[in-house]
Structures are given as C-alpha cells and as structure tokens.
Length: 192
Ligand SMILES: [Fe+2]
Ligand SMILES: [Fe+2]
Image 1: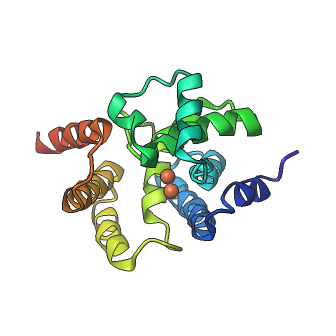
Image 2: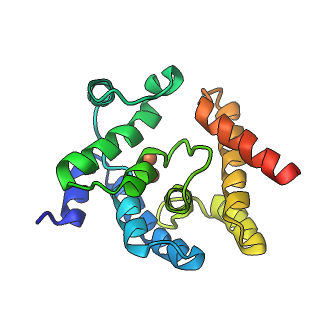
C-alpha cells in the first residue's frame, strides 16, 4: 500500500514550497467539502495530489499527454503550466490506482476549470487557490470575502477567474480557451 503523503512528497521534491502548497490545499479541501456537503475523503485526496506532475519537465508532460491522447485544445497543449494537471490525473490513475472519475477530473481541471464542473471539481479548483500556506494574504482576503458574503461557490470561482485573467493580462501571458469558457458561462449565469 502506497503512503500517499510520502508519494506526493517524493514527487514534489524539486520544489519544497509546492509540497507545502499541496498540504495547504488538502486542508482547505477538507474545510470546503464539509461546508458545501461534498465527499470529504475524495476532496482531500484529490487536493493533496493535484500538483503531482508539477516537477516533470515539459517534454515529459507533452509525451504523457500525447501518448494518452488527451482531448485537449492546442492552446493548452503548448502551455506547460496547464499540462501538469492532465499528466497529474494520468499518474494518479497509473501509480496510485485511482479510478474514481470525479477525483481524476478534479485533478485534470484544477488549473483551467471547465464549464459544468462537479461539486468536487469546484472544491479542488478553489482549494488550489485558497490554501493558506503559500497563497498571499491580500489575494486570499479578496476571495474569502466573496465566499463568506455569498456562500456561493460559483460566485467565488468567478472572482478567482477574474483575478487570474487580470493577472495574465498584466503579465502579457496567454489566457487559455477553457478558462475563458468558464468565465463566459458563469458571467452569463449571474447576469440573468
Ligand atoms: Fe497546479
Ligand atoms: Fe496547485
């Protein structure tokens, strides 16, 4: 039986802060799963291992994604920052034997999000952004304020996407099409 904490620690040994981030996400996932009535065990596991492929070199990530024919758009295939999420889902299945589709999807979509995320996917998406061990307090304050005022997980996700898109624009970086789709979907939902 694999010790998952040891496994993720070993996977992330190139980046100590990333391991801390993973522990923080695990903690936040527990809190959010209880708050929104999701499966706590699944949420905690998915959040703990969501970044397991983060230390892989770009070429290896591309190989995993191509060998396994992930149905992903070209703008994502070229984006190292996003590929780790797809490869991470594959490795969780291959190395840990995780077959639960909801857990694998939560890992796969933790960076971009996707339209019609499951509750578990939303919780892991937010746990990645709202963990308190490495994320800056001013960023957390803005998002937690909306979460606490509305207690609405979609409104909270919409704000994180707002902040992400602004930050990408400021840094003149690519905005992936899937995140824009989520933005459009949620903005439409709340404008009606
Ligand atoms: Fe990630
Ligand atoms: Fe992360």
